[in-house]
Amino acid sequence: MFQSRVRSIAKASSAFAGGAVILSFFTATYYRPIPSTNTSRQLHLEREEKDGRNDNNSSKNTNTNTRQSIHAAKNSVVATSISTAEASAPSRKNASFCSERSPYFSREDTPLLLSIAQHISIGATTLAIRLFMNTYGEYHIEDDEHYQHFITLVLGGDGRNTNSVNNDCSNDTKKKVTKAPLITISNHRSLFDDPGVVSCLLPLWIGIRPKYNRWGICSQEYCFNDALPSFIKGYIGAGQVLPIQRGAGIDQSLFRDFAALVARGEWCHIFPEAGVWQWKSLGGRGRQHLAEEEASNVNHDVWKSKSSKLKYGIGKLIAHAPITPRVVPFAHVGMENLLPQDLVTRKTFLKKDFWRGDPLKVHIRFGAEIVFGDLIDEYEAKHGELWKFSSEASSASASANATSSHFESSPSEKELYMKITARVEEHLEEVANITVAQI
Image (cartoon, rainbow, N blue to C red; front, side, top):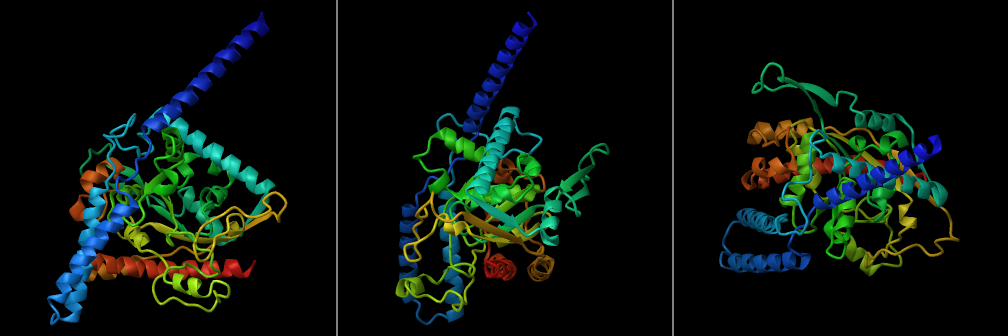
């Protein structure tokens, strides 16, 4: 009699758990991220048309001052980026079985079933990646003061959690805890870096918990394309990943969603190289012609780029956060052996002798925290106060709060982004060079 009752309870519990899992992923599918509507081809054609108009206009004004011409060209590019970004904004209303409400809730407001889906997605992915990395190969993190500082920041320590006062609230709710954003930046060695490397950064007991996990962005052509079923997109979205549209610029609505998460105080990770580069030194922008000319004999160590190797979206994330983010760089090497890349075509393929080849070895090193207060102070002394997101920004409120006139970047703001990005590049390249040299 007792055993029969135990079996009944076990069956009922299993049925309840299974039903909760199924319902949670229906919820994740319902709240899945939606990619932009414009294709990369459409963006390319729009820019070509705009460039053609710019060329015609410049030919009619040959006596215009050179500096003014350059300034006008920059403004026209900004206008093109803005119109393209607004036109390509995703529409949740037109998608089937999709909430019109933004899926990027605050931790306190996340629906229970969506929270369960996040725990399952992040927990299952983290466990699977750890199993793979510890059986097929191995990974090693330099456990120094920089890594320990990163763990402290993830857990909200070292001043990341602060008390703030909201004078618009009653006395009972006037004081509240706000959290400074945490941004990690790293080199991008393969398409599997996230989750392959990122899922291994934290101790397991921390890494399987959504509230301590990163938010990331993934090119919509890979993670949110039309060929993928909606429930797969829901699983990826529940893993705290947002789509981003390549070529749509830093004013696009998808990037605004990501910036709103930074403003809320979340941990957000970004690959500022904005693409996979498997050179020995950081980045690859501006070097493609060299690879095409000397694909068989390229001196990667000697070649130096005069232009930035990183894209300046990272500068925008930092500049407009209500609390200046805590920015920590790390570099890794080894993932390129799993998914090597053709240096000319940049196509990725699975390593040869996957089962019989050498085991995968990944090395990860963290760098010192990067500060930007002086650059922001210098800008505000010259141009006035920067527009900032609300500290309570959610992606839903961001659309109202971050109106296009606010989130669109001015030329002077872009100069600030470039300065911030140059500092990021300096620190990230230093860490990357040390990491590569030790292998």
